[in-house]
Image 1: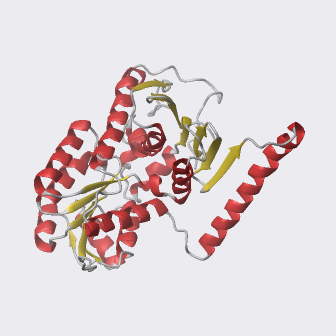
Image 2: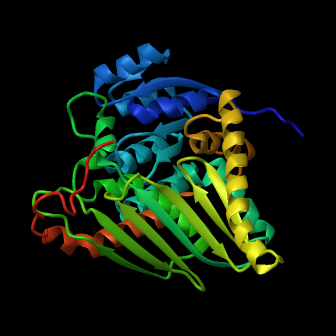
Image 3: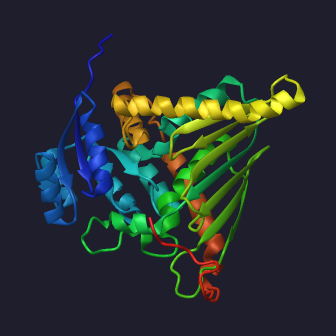
Length: 374
């Protein structure tokens, strides 16, 4: 059987911060060549192409698709444009890797999936945290049975609006992630939702609570979400006020518990030991500490030897998606999985609408105030 791989012609739609990340990882795939970049801002597209040695720059998507005929397109634009751009690319014959969230509404996701089927194209959603090294360790641990049955899953997503707003790139325009009250949720909310869903299974019900923003505040400061699966619960905390901006995932099982820090890329396993009571209490401190030191040292070595890079999950998503096209296999994250994630985001927004419509009075002094600093 032939083992030759098709050479992929890759184009980027979007020339922002995350486009540069996708560009580097696309170029790391041996049988792929980046042929063009497109951005509605022609000057931005041209600067991106010039600075990063991309052969061609366009400001019109249709013109780029006709001129360069890519078979893979990365859609790395604000999510309000994802459906329109992904559909145009698939209709032109390209497979699509679209940034999260897949789109803004479920009906847009449905159209994207329908077009992919109609034109025989594949669409992959960049749920990149699923492929971060620590999450792959957790998935392997759960799959091995060492965790036992999953009892519940908890995620905490800290949000820094200042950092997100700075992503505009200095052009004086607000980044899409801070455009309105729900923009931060659609920017960072997909991550904890798809991580919890990975270990929860199909979501049967969702309950959402949120603190009303104070008068003059743009965002909902605290959101709490309870997801119920068939036989377990999932919990998501979405926080703009807690310091520092933590990003954690905890998976609780009948045999062990896994605690993941997605900021430091470390995972700690906690489980019962057959030890005398006092010894067991001491080991409950020393064992996690030893695991943390080991993980930290391993990460430091990986960074020093350049084996660990920023956004490792995106790199792995890109690699797996391209390989799935070589092998004729399903993408690492399907359109249906992307749709499920957007359905949760829509449900959260729907339940929080009244919270945004009736802001609470602003507190006086500093008590209860949020510090918008990085």
